[in-house]
Image (cartoon, rainbow, N blue to C red; front, side, top):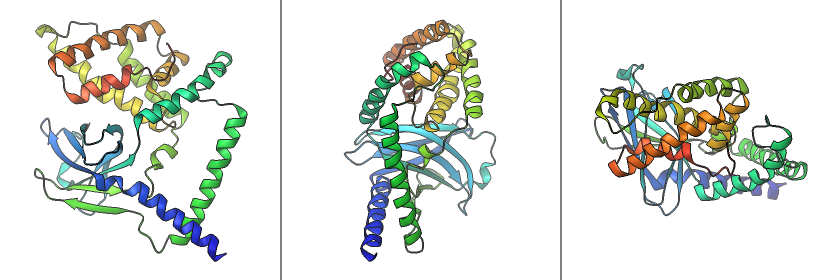
Length: 315
């Protein structure tokens, strides 16, 4: 019995170390922008590994959560990335610290896994168009479920054993970068985001928000000054509406690729295939223009995410 408990504790420590160490490899800072209506985070990777930022937010001085935003921002080895979110409707006087969560994840390996699964899903999609593109064969599904169940049981026992002897969360304050503190946090496991399954009604609600952007999209010449207001509004919506909601739906549905989520909107008859193709063609032109004129990194990252076709399916 002692041997079994020892193995479980060691396994827990290994898992904890693997998840927590990403915070030691990445540094961050945040600052208010746009007259204190947005917060912009910048992440700098000091390691040779890919790191996925999964959440950012703001705390009070006593570490009470003011806002938490789920994100999906990959920081390449020795790279720098940034993200931002809206805080114009918050009492910023109580905000004293920022926090964020991360985990090691190589996007190329995730894409390869998704493509492998999607090749199996194509046959299922022909017989059922409302299966969210994630149905697997019975054999592989039961095998994965068995492994997951075993892992959860072992992890649960180990957590109870070490509950009183290990710290679940670590935090560290960095020197003031601008006028505020930046604080890093490490949850129990960085995989907690993917375990929070988003309810179907919430997915449909967000689908309607995204579909409104597509259906009301204005096809304009982004190079003409007379279109500046429309262009600015659509560019902001690409980042703060489309990419934001797709990212959060993806995080709540086991990292479902954007393209499969967009196809889901067609399934629910919120969008037409023709409208998606027309909008994405225009967004492709915007992306090419952005490469020449060096558009904001947040916009370019959002466009890459939306136009990504790694799901291996067509509209």
